[in-house]
Image 1 (spheres, helix red, strand yellow):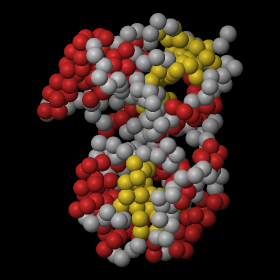
Image 2 (image 1 turned 90 degrees about the vertical axis):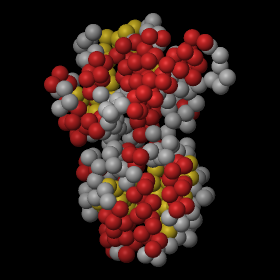
Image 3 (image 1 turned 180 degrees about the horizontal axis):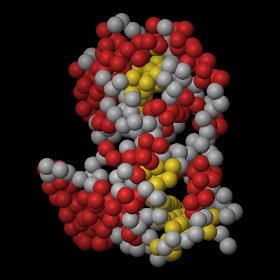
Image 4 (image 1 turned 90 degrees about the horizontal axis):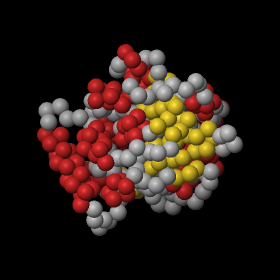
Length: 395
């Protein structure tokens, strides 16, 4: 009899965790496992890449209500108002907690417990998926992924402990995150595991051959960054570094793929720095890989990353890279061998890019090192996953 698995994630909008989950689901052995998937929001860009053997469960009613325009449900409306007020109060607290914790506290009583019992239930993200798997799912074994720099987030660790104490294995996606989570709570040390983000290089290489990138100006230097338009990605520093490039008379276009809460602020900043022709927000793209393939230099200015999946994808496509020294950078880039790791300040970002632009021999040496290296692949990580779910039942 096949083992019954459940995966839970917020949505399959484009993001590192989401791409990793889709890759894992496409590699899972469907002859051994029946797989259910629960999304709190459907209609993400990656939904269409789900394999046919995945059973997509209905959304919990409250999330379905939130995702429907003009839906009328007085009971749910009260909880929506309650949540909105709680979030506003949290914003004014001296020590605010993560919004996911506020939301879950507000709605936990109206979220149903799933009737089916699973052999293993997997929350593929911190926050709401973990709270749901911990408290609303019956399973012999429970796993929870942490794919962010958890120690430096607003998640209140004691609040989260109430959910993580019910989790059998906490999966981290980098050595840095594994160490930091292990040190968060003494009880976590025996159950924190490392499984790298699942990346299949052949899929990325094939998708890079698809149509895309018609907006890219091939006549100038092409810079690219991929990531959500959020403060943690430090696009303000990218824009200021672009201003230094322009003032140094470099002819370039810096393209950004992604969307998010900072879009309006970034557009204003681009205009203020007179970079409307040089720093271009392209919005979301279902397939960013043709754009990565077309660029000359890939740049990541993030303050922190759980792993740095897009940097690794740029490496797979043999691109010269400048990335800031976020905690996991040294796990991805060998400095001055297959890329550049720079400090987080604007001048260092500028100088890293400038080094490639002014020293073609150096840039070529980086590209040659990438060409000689075997494409990074973490498809073997699925064996670690199988081993975890096939250990003796814990609950």
